[in-house]
Length: 284
Image 1 (cartoon, rainbow, N blue to C red):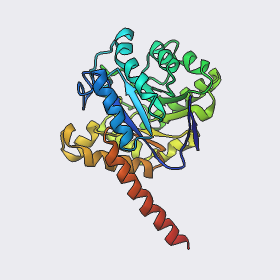
Image 2 (tube, rainbow, N blue to C red):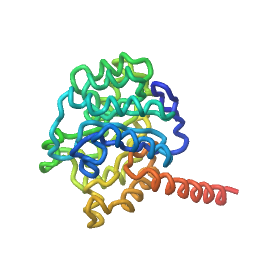
Image 3 (cartoon, rainbow, N blue to C red):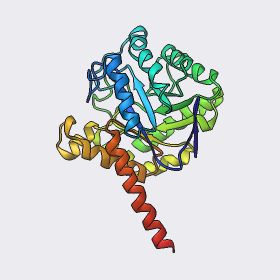
Image 4 (cartoon, helix red, strand yellow):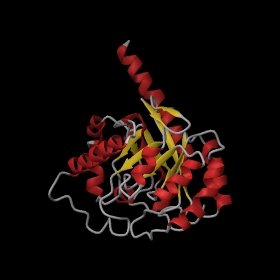
């Protein structure tokens, strides 16, 4: 599979690692560490050096209860970092639902629009459709960050069916607006308006989403469900995050979005070597 983006056609025949760059004071795991442009740019350099295939730069925290920054605040946070990131030779994603921020990022040469609201904000779909080749990631989120974890309920439906239906609708809306299918990836939205049981169900049945015809981009890194499963606080979820990334790839994810790039890259190298060797051995 190929993911078409502004400057790159990303080969997805091997799993890709998207490195997270949170240019925010309030992200759930590293809020404030990279809030200054200099620190964020240095972090971009470090992640590329560690093997990140894609950089994902965001100026809006989407942790439960987070405050939504206004457009001017987001632009001030991300534009200096994006200007640097696009010089590093890898695809660059902007993590935003704000169409003004999207347009400004694309004007700088950013490759991908990563939108937790799946291009539902007024004007967002038009920005994506107007660009001839930018990649997009459409994610499922029930509710808004400020309230999404207040007793999320899928009582009237199977969570997998509900998320699949939503992503199919947003995929179709993007295609109808003029976004080519090879520009689209889908994200089930682990932790976004879902209980730990919902997240586990989405993982166990993740391969069902491949029927939607788009690559899957998954983000388990340091999420609270991993804390529930291990009893570890957010700063001690490295092993759990790497395990979840490997499980996501095993279940068909083409891209994993992570904080800990070097460790995930190493784990995937070993996973690929061992699984490919096993396949070769059993078929010869």
